[in-house]
Image (cartoon, rainbow, N blue to C red):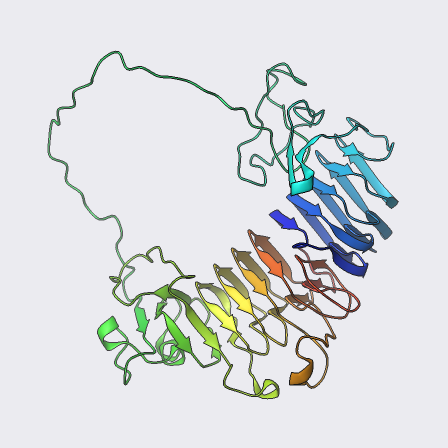
Length: 430
């Protein structure tokens, strides 16, 4: 499932022989609140190869050869498909289509985007797509605006199902002036007592890691922190947490079932609930940059029922690998890995706010001289196989490269063949 994402190129077009924006192979997908623009190839926006997909509240335009179903099928509801070439088996309901396709609620007139020359595909005033959709369970648009919003005098009024077509819900601008009639006086009647509601679970432990200490302690406080993440993982059991201070850690780690790992700490936070951190400012980096390419390990091996939150994975073989597990990966950056950014098999993986930048996958020995010019194999950013499930929210895939086939979702990703960013195969679901 893909929600609240955009698939587009930065300054040029994503390009692929089949499916410059998305290529789905022998799999199924659900997509909502998604913008797909400026992609090229056969099926520039979408290529379904023996696959099926449902699209709700999507905006797809300026995508070369448009959409292709090759042994597959797609269903669109509450969407905008403007100026595409449509080949194969597709159905449309309450959708603006740039070709004269039929279906309940289908319209064949210009959706009137706000400023498409500047990639602003919100609906302009007077758009025929306003209040012209049908009832939907998607109650927030791509920008998290609440829907439906009824625009008086347009489409249906006062019915409660005034959903707009496309990824963006048209909002109204209200200019109101409020003048208070009196100045209220607040008199406290008692002194409140504040009691902390968080009680740490008995027998569960939080371990601390600080790569800057001269030697490891017992890991129970910042002042006696472990020097390496691996030491904390050895001591931890299911239910424990590990907090890692900002810094560079040159190690590969294997997560443990039920143990949550958090990065982005400054090293002064008090034990208790996991606090808000600025992980992009206080960088906690796992890297193998000190090793030759062919000697670099996978940086993180996943586990079951665990969270990995607030880390930067840099220059490993695979960034993350998860086999027979289920992981939550939150607020991370995976960059410049020469294997997959994320590889998983027989697993469930949830991604939120994760960025995959410049991950290159090719088959065989990685020659340094060809690091940015030779790409071969499967899914540069994400590769999932064998009945796996991937759920991605608010993620970015940029500059990832590969050569193979499967399901792909990418932003400005280069490739020779198929599947620059994501590849799913063997009954895997997105």
